[in-house]
Length: 562
Image (tube, rainbow, N blue to C red; front, top):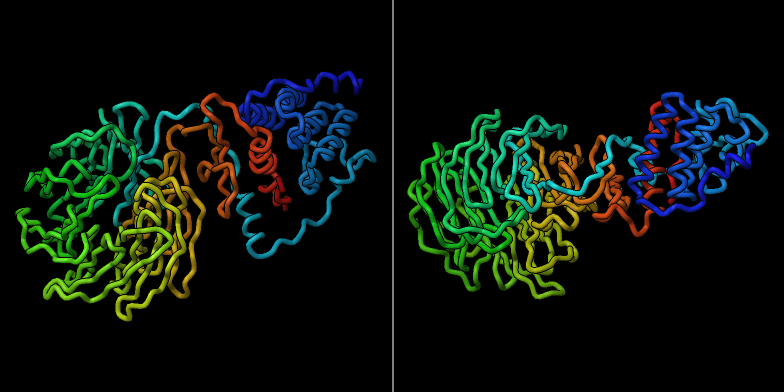
C-alpha cells in the first residue's frame, strides 16, 4: 500500500516556474485548513512534481496524509522531509495536523523538539524580521502599471503615488494614508503618463505635471481636475521620476512648474499664468531651481549661472552670481541671506547674497573625475550636504566650523546621474538615493553620533513633508519612512509588478534577503526562472502559511538557512 501510493508522486515533470509551485502550495494549505487531507495530498503531490527536493512540500504532504488517516504514509513522508532538510522541530511538535502520529517511534529524530538556538544582537533582529509577516497575495501577471512619482503632504497625513501604464498614454494618482500606506482612493486618471506631482501646503490639492506637458490642479477629495497651463516643448514618453519639478512657494502664492528641456511656468495660487519660460531649466535628470524661504525669489541655474527672478512678476531681479566655475545647482539657505552652489570643478561654495562674498569653499576629490551635483541645507541651517556625479560621493559640512561631519565612500553611479538629498525635519538624518531608483536608498544619522543608515533597499529619493513621513519609490513599489526615527513604516507594491511577486501585508519583497527581510519571487516574462528551486525555497520556507499560524500561537521558529 505504502509503495503503491508513493509511486503516484512523479519523479520529474518539466518545471512550470516558482509561481506555480507557490500557488499549489497555498491551495494545499487551504485544503488542510478546511480539513480535507486527501485533496491537500493531491495538491502537495502536484507541487512536488515541480520541486521534488523541496522540504516544505514534503512536510506539508506528511500533514495531509496524517489528516487523511494514512498514518504509515504520514510518517514515511515526514522522515523524507527531514532527510531533505526540514528541521523546525518546534513547529512539528506544535502542528495540530500531525497530532495523530506525534510520539510514534518512527517520528524522525531531527524533528524532536529542542530549545531553539539563542540569537543575539543583529542576528536576533534579523530572525524576528524574517518571521514578520505572512503571504497575502501572489502577483501572477506581468506588469502593466508602475509607480513613477510620489509626494507627501506637510502634515504627514496623506501620500500620493503616480502610477503609469507601461507602453500606454495612461496615468493615474492614488491617495494614501501616509502613516500606514493604505490606499484611500484613486483621485484622478489621465490620457497621458504622470511625470511628477506635489501637494499644496493645505493638503487639499495636488499640482500634477503629465508627460504631455500639461499642468493641472487635482483636488484630493476626488473632485474634477482643472488644467492650468502647458509647457511649450514635448518630451518623449518616459516614465522615469526625474527631470521635472512641481513646487509651491513657501508663502503659498505661486507654483513653479518645469520639465528639464521643456521650459517652465510660473502660476499663481488660482491657476493664472504669471510667466512662461521656453529655455531649459536643467538637464535630463534634474531641474536646477529653488525658492527663497520667503517665497519672493527663484534661483535658477540653467546654463552654468545662478540667476535670480522675482516671484511676483517672473522678471529677472538681480545680477547673476559671478563664479569661477560653471554652476550646476543652487539652493537658498533657510535664512534667505546665503546661497550654496555646486560646480563643474568639484567644489561646493557658500555665498553671502548681499555682498556676494564667498563664505565657504569645499572641494571633493574622488577616484573619478566628478562635478558637485545636488546640495541641500538642513532645516535648522547648521549643516550643508552635497553630492557628486558621476562618481557618487556624499559630504555633510558643519557650516559654522567648516568641518566635515560625514564623508561617504563611493556610492556607485552611472551616466552622470545625481544623488538626491533629503533631510529629516529635525536635521538629524540625511537620506540619499539615485534619481532613477535603481540603486540602494542610503542615509546617515548625524546625531547623537554619526551612523550610516544603509538600508540596502532598491528605492529612490525620499519625498518628505514637515510632518515626519517620507515616501520613496522604485519601479515596482513604494515605501513609507518615519523621518523622525528612520524606521520604515510600510511597503506596498505597484498595481501589478514588473515580474511575478510574493506579497505580504507589509508589501512585496526581493529575492535576496537584507536586514529588513525584503524578499521577491522574481520571474522572467514567461514565468520561468533560472534558479527556480532556490527561489521557491525562499518563498515556501520564509512565507509558509503554516509557519504564520505557528508564530501566531507563540511557537519560536528556527530561522531557515537556505
